[in-house]
Length: 76
Image (cartoon, rainbow, N blue to C red; front, side, top):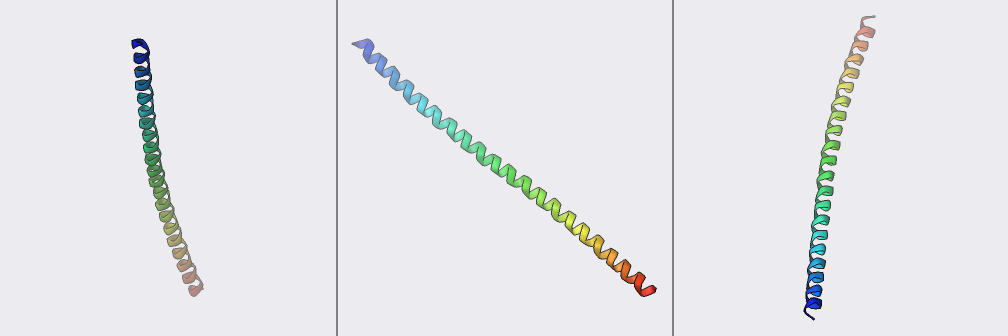
């Protein structure tokens, strides 16, 4: 009788511990997903900023080329 009670107690403890550990692991996975999303967002933000700089540089080059062409046409 005592051994059956002890066995039931151990099973209950094991089940409780496994459930708690599962919740902890799910929380860690969820936390990693959030951190991963933040890292991805930061990476995309940097890419966007780099693209904006490239577009601005290209526009500046085009403007200077247009000014140069206008000046050459006026001189001709």
